[in-house]
Length: 160
View: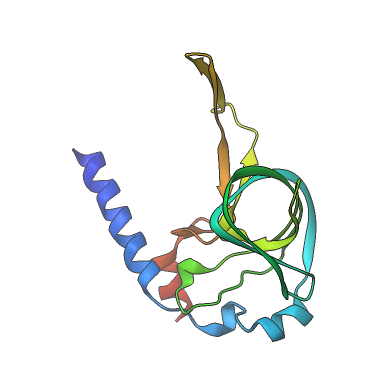
């Protein structure tokens, strides 16, 4: 019962933090300003890309394609932006830009649609009625309720 209440408190803090706004100086939001300043760090990895509508951008963050209703697919992660970006006033909607390459996708996407696959002992696969099922551990490349080990509510309070 104590664990339940502890998880409930964490959930409430996370939801409260996500509804608060942030100071724009900590996150970049203007695309025209961002495209000239965006820098990436190289990374080699795999990710699951999914979303109802995935916008693909070029290096100047101009939209070059929009793909609707794509099934989740595994892509290569080439680079990740070194800064968080935000196109709203909600801190929990912040994300990293991610350069990906796949069968039909090659460009920069919003990290909120990218789930980086981790090598983990928790990963498992099994077969059910002839269907192979694989469970993977992933990292979300958008802002969550915690960032660098801090719950967002405590981070917002300390930055104000």
